[in-house]
Image (cartoon, rainbow, N blue to C red; front, side):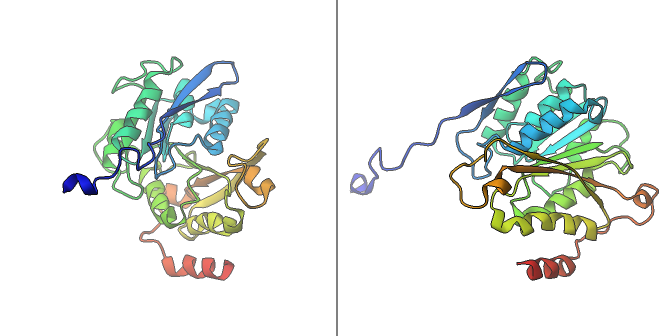
Length: 278
């Protein structure tokens, strides 16, 4: 009887196979980037934000050279790989702790000849699992140094094309607050496209939340791509082609130990503002 209720072998469509995309550096080197075949976390795409961050680092290598870098929601990890190739002291690329995703990130690190000691556990670029908003002790441990809290954190954070997950804005800001070094030179580089133009106000609400918590927010650049990443999607094509980059920094007072950003987030302030914008 059991076989009577079994699904036919071809009842479910097969899972999409893994894919490979490439990024060509300003110097002409080609970086192969393996992507998982399918991911509910959207890690099977090489997002425009990742390409733009990589190019931004190449144009301004001093942003990462000799510094510590943490990437959230890395997927293929292109910005992390380019940062390591440009001489970052330590790069930790992270994404949800899914085994296939972690294996793919490590494969991209190991396969990049531009990274010294690529693939070694103590090399300049490593991969690790991380859930946004969670305690970051295991990430900070990669930096070594003192065991005292708040003495060793990351100089540069990368958030590339993450803002479309509106329900995660609070968790992303918590991750920035708990992992970014409290100096005026530290920065979270937030780069994104409003892939759903009718929800752009919700994407931008991230920066309202950041300001409400005392962070300093600055728009750095705007770049127009040749075509949208998802060409057949609805909505204003010009918006879907536009990538913007923003810096989220500590205020000077916080770097001096005053006026520290407070948690938990003041939900009633930000949610009320977002509700009026809808």
